[in-house]
Length: 162
Image (cartoon, rainbow, N blue to C red; front, side, top):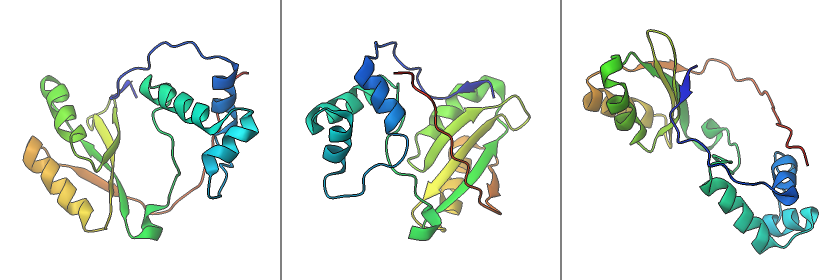
């Protein structure tokens, strides 16, 4: 992996509360009618401050995503890992075409013949071939799809020193 196709994070100062948010909200998010309020109380701040701080971290791309991880197949959707062999002179053009589709997530550059890897996520299994066809029509390149054969759960939490 050489480079991720997302804008870099802004350099912003993180105070102790920001670091506690990053450290403590990587799992066990409250499942209740006011989860942000419950999470904020656990952090010793109010719900409005927690929401403002999360938005600031997202806006600065310190966080690229904040939300639940869902097994999409259990709610009727589908995921597929996909790759393209993109001529280097067209890489940025193709990246923009691929990233324009709302079904595309996690687009990464690789040092390999298949140099662009991304995940397709669709609301139905039928959405995967439709998204692939759309990418192939837009780019003129063959999408190599690698459907999931088995799922593993690997939990990783990153330390944010408080």
